[in-house]
Image (cartoon, rainbow, N blue to C red; front, side, top):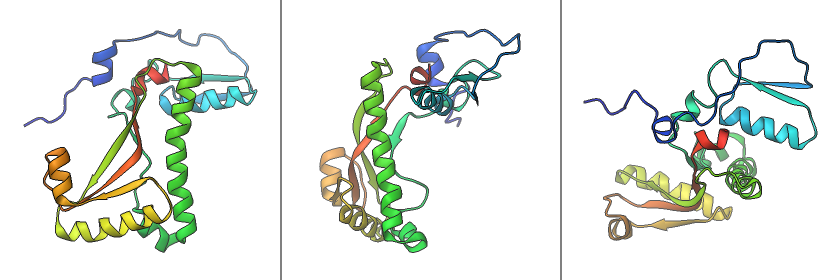
Length: 188
């Protein structure tokens, strides 16, 4: 069974929004950003806002790499659970990392609102499920760490998850700090 298509959802949904000319001459700029995906677009915007002369280039059409293949769910989680990160760099450092992720979601919301970019940005909740009793134990510890540092989370027991979402689990963390966005349109 193939679980993935060859076509990007965002390219199929939107088509090619804009086409930008290829570079055929030498140009000068203060800062050159390589890569015209969502990261390059946001970096370019921040640099221009700071007053720099910026040029962005890409060998392909804008946002046709991983930005057109993203699920476009924005969540603040990083690869290491907060309680484990606290063991590695200290609790305050771990909390700062996770709070920076939360701040990034809200900063992007504010940027989209301020610039009136039509990209379907919408705040969402996210649900981090425990698939087993063993996973529930560490997920509960993760919840307590996030709750202690006011990350806007609630613990849901298995019954609440089933009643609310129709999902079978062993508990879950419900977070208020997530969003969705059409990253392809946002990059443009």
